[in-house]
Length: 471
Image (tube, rainbow, N blue to C red; front, side, top):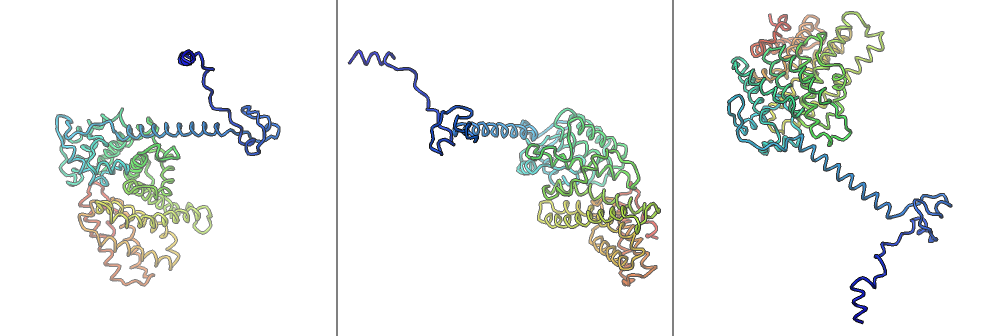
């Protein structure tokens, strides 16, 4: 007994390595309760019957491999999110730039409050973290530049510190080889700053630089991936491109002036309205500003061709279809804009958001008026609707305060001039039957607001469009 125990303990009584699990019968043979030779990948019975031969353990292996792949992809996405969101940055309470120290926390609060005016768009995740006080999710230099720009815009742009431009330029060059989204945000913010300080060549320079960054890093307005999760900051990229397109169009407000950015970006801009429901409020504000400016220019270009006699409204089916298509787009976008304005009333810092949406509202209404005005000259009923629309815009304008005018897009002056021309014509023709007192009151509203806006934004020299209606 002792010798047997010793033999076993030394391994001499072991019959060999332990057997693994028995090879299982394939699912088809097991269900039919028939003998299976267990050959793989296809057993004899399944081969003879020409049916799929599947082993349950094989399915488990495939499922495990799929789970592993999904887990690895999720980990890669998380790493990309951390990289893009700057998680590696360490929170800092103060930063030195050009030997000047500034408080990051104060700049954070300032940029959150004024991000609409700065055209800074943060993804929902980054904005939530920033509002919670997390200073690691955004580069502090961007916050500092945003505070400088917003301070100048807020002060009326009359007393610009000579050292400001070199300081901003110094910050701008530091982003060239870093996070592309932050570099794009910095360039578009500086293009906006240059535009609103009447430095049109500077605005052009920064627009071109932003486009160079986009090409270098292969950034697009529309996400290339079907899943936005693969690029957690795609809304930020969209916001940057939308603001650049807006500034590109606003540099020269006449429809026939050349644009800097290539046509394919404007083609992508046409694809944005169906994505509106997917956008947060920040990215929607920037997107609708660019789209509304595009609609305004399209309406003027279309109307000019008709007025020049290059197309006939009644005989050219193609031109009529283009007119109907543009009106349909404008009507749909106006309805959705009003919905988002109602949502904005309950949002933080709602005043700035609502004022930012007033500009697109005026531009879309102006585009609609311009298109309707072409046929209204020969259609009495449509003319009456046109006069009512002009009076409605006058009612909206009457609610503005003088300090609100500074926040409006200067293109609003074009809309007021257009409404004034319609109402002046109505006073002469009296086709709609509206009370002459209402028309004179509306003309006075446009006149007073145009003069006040010119005082706030003299560098844009838009008052000339209203001169026929001011005297």
